[in-house]
Image (cartoon, rainbow, N blue to C red; front, side):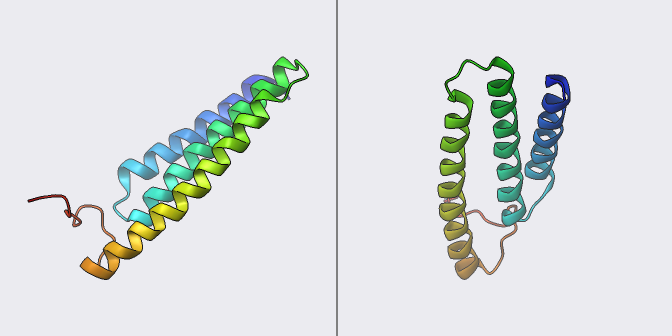
Length: 101
């Protein structure tokens, strides 16, 4: 499999993630779009690491770091969504204006 196919897959996944973030109004679906974008970056990092083949696993190490950051983001993001839902009884991104005066 060539590098171009894997990078095209990564670009497609990233585009779907951007669409999910920009088009959806549900906060959980926005978080899923962000996760999809992070996974697309992981696919590209692993593809470039396999293509370069220097012996050190730099792309894989960065991918593990991104997976760790994504897990923390999901934990904090879902906690915020749950707290907003308890207070406002909605998770619609347009209706949540907690920082407005």
